[in-house]
Length: 214
Image 1: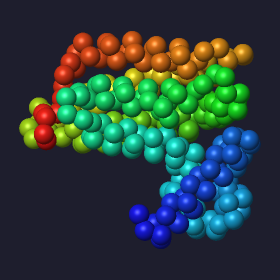
Image 2: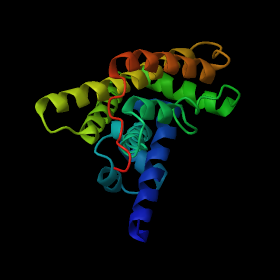
Image 3: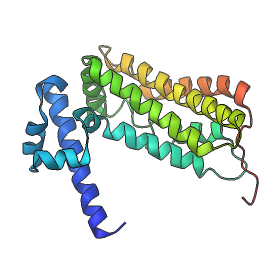
């Protein structure tokens, strides 16, 4: 990535981080794009150069995380199936589960805040589903397929895997909004993920295992 691209990426992240803090503090409906622009010290036009909507600003992290999942599955090593790769990435350091360490009070505060904001906004709930569906469609495209039957199988697998991610997000949200937040949340979600992927593997099996030397 060149210097120009790095600068643009830093600006994009700065705007998104600023928006997330403002929306988390004041609520989605109470913050305007103009206010986000002022807080980020950029013009409103600059904000829209990077993000089409305010919802896109809030879900920048989820969109980016989905793209990382798809790239990770596409680059899985020989001998590893799609289901195993997706599970490994979801449970890895820096993944969805490991970010929810219940011993980290700051992380738990952020978890509670972001889930409260989403719960209070039907608009954000809809945008969240768009993000997850987009991840599933990107994954299906990455898995490929020549015939209509192969493409259908890829889509079924991709949406099934993202359904686990979706279910874990909802489980985490319920726990995050409980008072107090249950202890050992990360471990509980990890066990739930293992159980969910075990169910999928009964149907998906070794689908997508790469041949050695590809």
